[in-house]
Structure formats: C-alpha cells, structure tokens
Amino acid sequence: MTDPRAAARALLGWYLDAGVDEAIGAGPVDRFANARRPATVPVAPTAAPSRVAAPSPRPVPVRHPAGPADAPDGPAGAARSAAGAAASLEALREALRGFDGCGLKVTATNTVFSDGIPGAPVMIVGEAPGADEDRAGKPFVGVSGQLLDRMLASIGLSREHNVYISNVLPWRPPGNRNPTEGEMAACLPFIRRHIELAAPRVLVLVGGTSAKTLLDRSEGITRLRGRWFDWQGPAGGPAIPALATYHPAYLLRSPGQKASAWKDLLALRRWLAEAGIELDRSAE
Ligand code: URA
Image 1 (cartoon, rainbow, N blue to C red):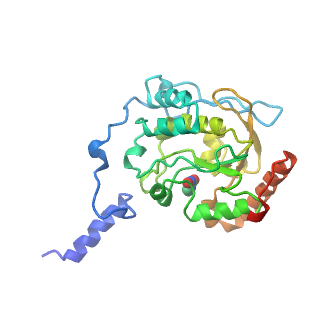
Image 2 (cartoon, rainbow, N blue to C red):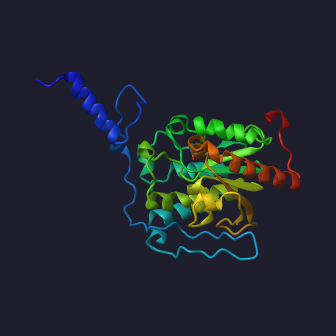
Image 3 (cartoon, helix red, strand yellow):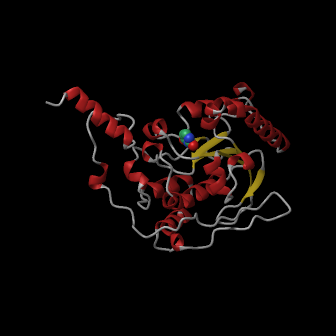
C-alpha cells in the first residue's frame, strides 16, 4: 500500500515543480472558472515601439518595427487604446481592472498598480510583483522592497514624501517565472501611459527588464546602469530624464554590486539637487 505521507510529499513536490510555492488561502480557488479568456490574437516577439532619445547628441533608433502585436484588435493594440483613453491615474487603474488581454491577470491575486505619492518628482519602475506584492496589492513590499526603501532613504527619498513606485507588469507571473514577450507587449502600453500620467521629474528604472523594455535597448543592465536617457512617452510630451540602475533583488544576491548602485544613487541625488527638488532629510 502507498505510504500516505510519501504520497503527500510527492504531491507537494509536484506543486512546487509547477511553480505553486505558497498557500494563500484555506481552500482552493479555480481562477480560470469565471475569468474571461484573454484574446488569442498572436503577439509578435517584440514590444511596441517607444520613442526614447539618447542623452545627446545621437537619437536612439526605434528598433522594433510594427508587427502582429500592433494589430489594433490584438492584445497590445487593445492595451494601447485602453491606456491611451485614460485621462488620469485613477482612470488608468480602472482601465487595467477591465483589461483582459494578458493571461497573467487570471492567476494573480491582485492588480498591483502603484504605491507612494502620485505626482511625486521621482518615479521608480521595477519589473513585476512577487508573492508579497501580489498578496498586498502594492509594489515593492517584500525584502527587495525593504532594501529599496533603505536605498531611497539614504538620499532623502521615501514613498511617504517624494517617490511614486510602479512596475512594468501589474500582475505576478506565476511562480515568479519570466514573463513571455506577449505578456510584456500587452502590459507595456499601460506602464508607458502610467509614467506619462504620473509625470515625474525623473524616472529610475530598476533592473534589466525595466530598463531594457522602457528604454527599448538590447544591452543588459550592467551596461545600462549609471547612464541617463531621455524617456519619451507615447503622447509625445516633454522627455523625462531616466536613470537605469540595479534591481534591489539583484543587490541582495550580489552585495558586491552595491558600490555601483551607491554611485547611481549619488548621481540621482546630484540631479535632484541641481533641479532644486527638496529631499526629505528625516528619511536619511
Ligand atoms: N520586484 C519588482 O520588480 N517589483 C516589485 O514590486 C517587487 C519585486
């Protein structure tokens, strides 16, 4: 006869292998039962083009030509229409709630929209919610978020006073797997519009995914970090200075890179001082 404890262990192992790494409730929830299926229009393996200019003097060419992902009736096209129609951050949050073009929404517990002060001078954009953020419905609340808070505090920034935070993806990929290109393409119009509506004075892109997708660059974060770019929104308003830096989760795994991250923070502090932006000295 099968040992029931061995069978239970085998079942748990199977769940772990499938990416089910935590229990979030006493009973199972079939999230697929009532969810409307996302559109099945094919998505091109590239993000929609963005208009990002290099610091100077060379403009950065847009490398991603329009493809099937840009079809007006595809997920990315639907996302662009929904995001573009939002005239305020609240309307954008509602647009995301009503958007069914990304399968990640089906498995996520919460839509993670933002934290901090809307309209703050500094906007941080990370990659995607993890388990803690998915549960809380807020970005950067887990261990990497705590390190991010300490890093920000070291230069007089905090989400209570002068920082606004969001992610490229508003939904947690199950088991923290890498998002697919289709999922990224369907979410990018929302974060682009999000930045436009939040209209920060400066953007800080943490981690390779955030920097590469929002700057439309192919280099890794090691090459992008510490550099300034001009981020241009889809509506073509004034460019926003954007600094790429390491993700705090990477710094937790590779503490030797903290010196580089500290240089980036000092560059940000200099930029803020030159721009006359007041810092929160009590946070330091
Ligand atoms: N990592 C991110 O990029 N974003 C979060 O919100 C949490 C962890």
